[in-house]
Amino acid sequence: MSRDVGQALPPANPEFTNVWQAKAPAPPFDCIATRYDALWTDTAIGRAQRNLVWHTIDGLFHTGDRILDIGCGTGEDAAHFAARGVHVYATDASPAMVQVARERGVTATVCNAEELGRIGWSFDGAISNFGALNCVANLPAVAVSLAALVRPGGSVAICLLGRFCAWETLYYSACLQWNKTFRRLRSARYHEILIQYPTVAEVRAAFAPDFELRRWTGIGLLVPPSYVKLPAALVRILAACDRILARLPLLRGMADHRLFLLVRK
Image 1 (cartoon, rainbow, N blue to C red):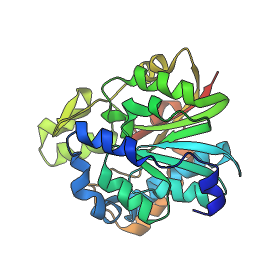
Image 2: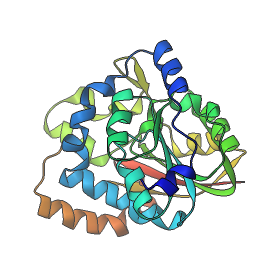
Image 3: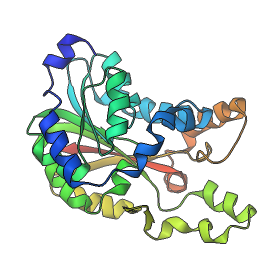
C-alpha cells in the first residue's frame, strides 16, 4: 500500500495483536497460510469465484473510501481494493495469514471477528469473503460490533458458505461419501472452530436492526467448490454462465457461497 493509504487507516496495533495471541490458541489456518494462495486463490476455481464476488461488489466502494476486511486471509481482496484507490484495514484471526498479507503490503492486524469492537475506528463499509463469518459462534454479536464501525449508509458485503450446495451433494453422492453429501445441514467442527451455515433468514435477523439486507446472490453455482477438479477453460465458461444464472431466485440458493449485500441504516 502507498504511504497515503497507511495515513488514512488506523495503525496495525501490535499490542492488541499480542494480547489476542496470548489468550487464543493458534488458529488451524496458520498451517496452510503459506500454501493458501496455491491451494485456492490462484487456482482456476478460486480465481473464478473471487472474480464473481468482485464483479458484484466493486461498485460499492470508491476511491478514497475506507473499508474493513474481516477475515482477510492472505490479503487478496485487500490488495484488489487498494489498487482501486480504496483504503483497506484488514483483520484475520490467523497470525500467519496476517503475516502473509502484510508481506504483500496490506495494513493488517490479528483480530478475530468477535473482537471487532476493539478497533475503534470509522469505516465507509466492510467486506468478509469466502466463509470467514461461518466460523463465528455469535453472528448477531459480530453485527452489533460492525454497526459501531460502519457509518450510516455504508455498504457491507459478506460471502458465506451456503447451507446447500448442489455441486457438493452431487459430487459426494457420486463418490458414495454419504456422510458428506448433506453435511452443511448441520454445524461442523474443524479443529476447535465451530463452522455454521446460517440461512438467509438467519443472516437477515442477525444483522437487524442496524443493517438492511438489500439483496443476495449465489457465488459458485456452476463453478464448483475447490475440491472438484475441472479444466481451467471449462471453469471460465461456467463462470460466465454464473454471472447470469447465480443471481436467479430459484438457483442462487444452490451455489457454493452466498453473497449478501447489506446497508448500514
